[in-house]
Amino acid sequence: MSFDAFLIALLCSLVVIVISLWFIRQQLKLSQVREEKIRAGEARYEEERQKRVDSIRVLLMAAGSNELNWVEASIRIKHLLDQLGVNLADHEDISAFYIMTEKTAHIPTHEQWKDLPKLAKDKFLKEMQAYEQEHGEHLLRAKSSLMSYSL
Image (cartoon, rainbow, N blue to C red; front, side, top):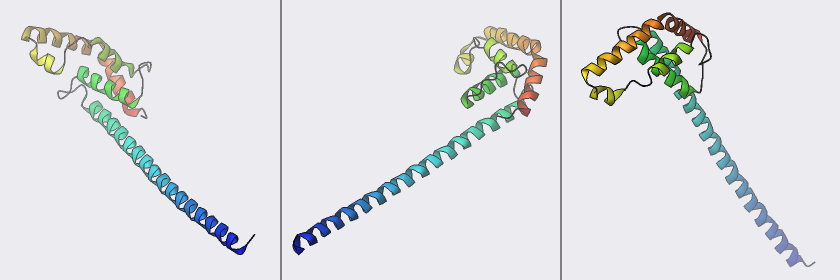
């Protein structure tokens, strides 16, 4: 092998090494960016999760008061638990929120409620009050159980 051929082979090898190093460096940068995005996504997920847990706690504190009736609190709490991916329908005490939500699922909400005639609203309000009286003790147990439950 001549000296010129050796130099050409050496030069080609160096070019391949430099290109390989550049490619590896780019892949490491991309990997770092991906990891940062994953960490940011996990942090955002935890933040959103914590907001839902805090919302449940606020609802529990207001539930059963003049501010928030049991029916509305139950619907909201069940919805937040669903968003958290937690199903406590089989929990002896906490199931009260699921029961109330199920029993009142036929009652219109939001805009539909506003459009109801007064007579229909009164009928539904009486029905909701009856459910609240019927399940009052169970709802109080559910409130204290969920307050102490680790979400």
